[in-house]
Image (cartoon, rainbow, N blue to C red; front, side):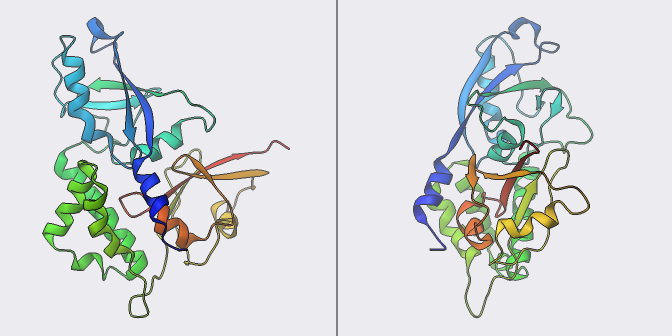
Length: 261
């Protein structure tokens, strides 16, 4: 079965534990306080900036949601990546401990786009259009009305499954008159942002290893992770995209590799 409602629902409801702590340099008086919360994998950190600021305001810190950015081990986080993708990239696959994210105050570093609600919406919709360009040469996303595009964003920001999928299901059309050309999948390896190339619907993940490790030695062991679970290498690209995509219309696959025998 290409489309599995239960899988989609599980993906939508999945959460990851995050512990937010204040940067000691900017917030010395409350640097020992922390905010532990479970956040939806499919969502984005900026949707929770206000909650984070309100929590720490209870301890006397007046923090503006538009004047903060996040770091992990001194590495600024790309807020325009879905939370689940960031979690899978940064965390040890066997770890159940919350990610400890540092809340910094001030202008974000130059290599990270400065956050604003309009910027997040623009990046999100651009991703959807890019994915549809791969699937349908942009013919479906170009038909979305402004109201439908807004419903997508609101469905995501307010975490409303039915509202989001009412519109998102239109982007998965696959018929004789509108066949899918290529599958929007991004792969993440250690030391690089992501890899993206043309993938046909019936290709399997294991068929793509030679492309992923082109011009470099292949590891002895490779595991594909998406939404925090191992994806069998025999998984067909079309099934992966139809059921395990993030709301931005891409399937984000993190690769764990090692050379241990």
